[in-house]
Image (tube, rainbow, N blue to C red; front, side, top):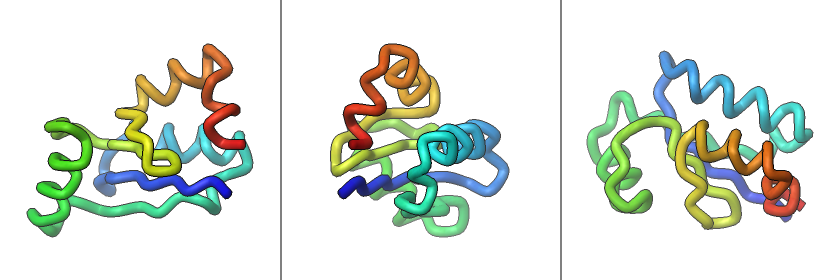
Length: 86
């Protein structure tokens, strides 16, 4: 079973692009979104889990850190995203 965790902010266009890509893959209902914009402890949690990354989105699939949207898109273009989602 696929589990997707995405740290985001409400105004992040790349967060929306990531959600759209997951919708194309028919896994949008598997996303747990964590809005870091109002809680500094959540931003710190994202920072700690992602190895120090401060930008959103930060995406994890089945507890594996994928990175941001560019990383997600690159995985999709190489065909590796489908393997992670299956």
